[in-house]
Length: 353
Image (cartoon, rainbow, N blue to C red):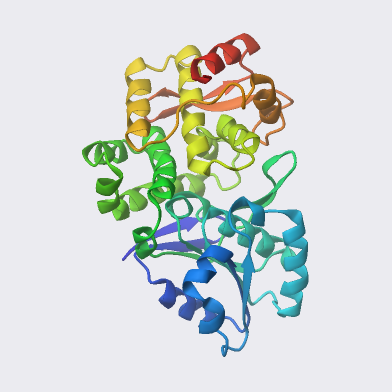
């Protein structure tokens, strides 16, 4: 097992290669009351309610699958239930599931009693390398993704690699989008490793190394800039356009699929405005395509006006101006502030079919 420490408002460990059963045993032994959120599909497989039926102080709350759980109506209900569960400031919330569940659990923990302990047990690759680490918590609104949230770090993250054995190829590939992002902004060894293992089957065989490298990058960045004053923004590469695509698709795309499209858009924008070399663009496109990730959108379903409108309302915009993280070169992120509409539309045309 490998441990990576993250220093934010407090220091916590990400344990890679942990046992989820051991993690829950540890958490429930530390706290008198524990409130566990688990999505419906995962509960059907694990049946935590049965396993913890006789455990005093443990509440298992089944939430909707995917992004549907990150809704204010769900949150309101959970606040009532967490009160009934008698969760105090010395107790804990656990997010047991994919990135949507750890986002939700972190937000509930951040807002209950102005902040209680929470732990992440991510069960998807995207959750393991991104959502559960870093202390960004949030829910969605009609205006966009994660627009309501808080910075509230977990007390610990436990990554059980065994969950990846039953993760679908589509979900594994979607998680690889976040891994590939990390490779282009900071650790190019990730790219080399994936180029040597360029099928989903082969990438699965090096999953633990990919997770370790990706989490290490995120831990280093977050430890230097917890509340995203500037440096942490590099982790948003591919996300400004990607979030707009994800929202416009009504979350029918996986988060990583939308990020892959966003990375292609923002790399093309970087070629125009930051001088990114075509060799880096080609390398990124080839890697994403090798894992079946999308690079383009249907112009009939994703209009330029709709996407640009969603981006204007995104939390990454400044003073009403669009703002992107791009690449000046491999491993050298750069900022693109208020690009002209003509350039944006020209790049849009390159990915719209």
